[in-house]
Image 1 (cartoon, rainbow, N blue to C red):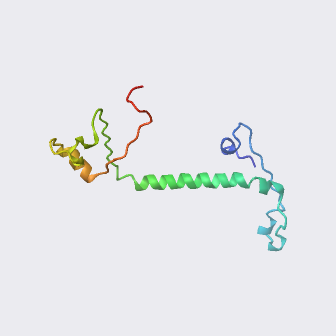
Image 2: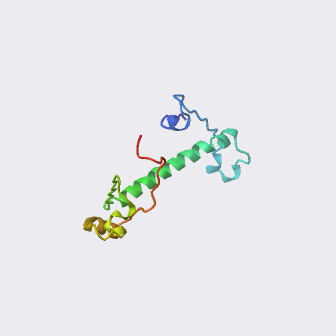
Image 3: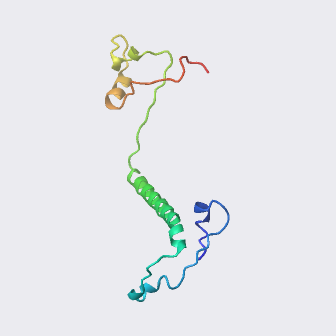
Length: 125
């Protein structure tokens, strides 16, 4: 059996993956008295390939189901980045002299990030 669709996923090359299945291995489907007591080496070594295949299929199926459940609801994300503005310069942070009704409404109904950090001490490249 040559598994052409799986060769790039598991081998990472253009070589094909060939697997030979002995006929005596699956004879217990026909006769339950002939269940093999020892397994050939190729079953043990290819376990990781089959595990990766099942995990990939599970991830694919779960992402398809998650996408279907989120089709009707799209989040509204608004990010406001301002230069030279302090923490208390907006109405929702306690500034009494500036009126920002729309920003105050968005802050009251949504999520506000109050702890932002920078990796450099100044605003220049």
